[in-house]
Amino acid sequence: MIQLISARESESIQDIQDRGSKRAVIFSHGGAIMFWALMSVSNPDMSKLQTDPLHNTGRVVVKGTPAKGWKLVSWDGHSAG
Image: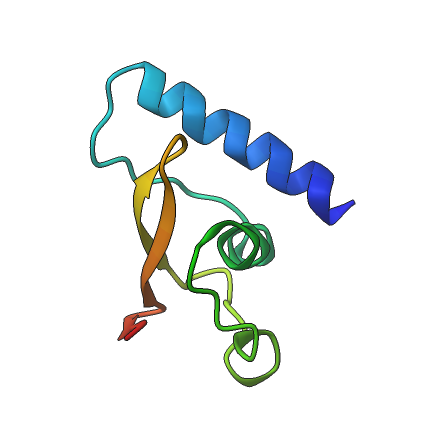
């Protein structure tokens, strides 16, 4: 189930990039964003699942592209290091 959600989110992000958007803001359920980010970035901090889960009003900032991959920049306002 989680992989299906991640695949759908990744397809949507690719569509956003294909439309020319360079700095998109994407809104979704906190849990969906949390799992997509941790499954998709090159520098995941899996401890966030227990210590700092993303709530529905939280935000994740990633940098990259679907083709080159993603890096976690910040997690709910805190630098990812």
